[in-house]
Image 1: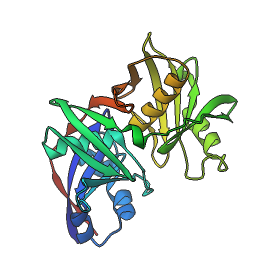
Image 2: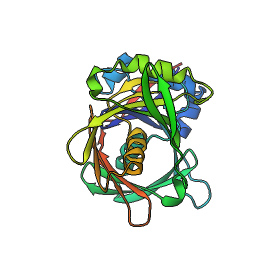
Image 3: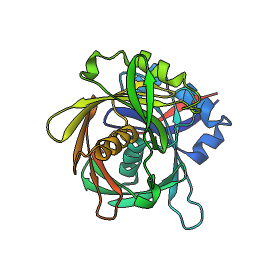
Length: 267
């Protein structure tokens, strides 16, 4: 029997347990085994949430002169790729005013705008140089495959709350010729002049209260279709504000929160 120190937190309701790679290694368990073991309702309540956490965030040492490395492991043990909501939480964990993380091959800078609001800087060189939006059809709906880091499919609808999101996500994921590694499915509808309402079903997790990489995928679609400037993406967990940067990248700003660290017994 061993213990691992976890730091709970969230980004717009996406809940995580953050732990150090060295602490994870001492358990003798793989990251996917730890995710399945720790992302339960019981431990979620111990962390201060009302349900299981959405995944683990594992902080690893920097390589060479690079920044700290951050990895996301989904609740079911699968790799989560890039998690921008988790990255904002990890930024708060550093207690610094600015910094960067390396995540799934991407170097992402961030800065603290206020006590609990973090702005991420997605560099132009790290974004798709040519945005090729591909039509996708599932469950009787037409959507768009968006090539942004994690796999995404965005479906414009009249009312996001009227959609059977689980059924739509399952039908989309069945198209393995388009989505070999699973897919995050977003449904969107207009919300005012410069906003969009969004629900999301994340691969390896299910429906979540927010998905920042999904919000970026949605913004890329909106900008490609001519919607100008700053966008507010309204999700169940809150609002992300996205805007093009002067250097050709994307700025993503939103809230995050940290809970009190605690020890969990694992075996």
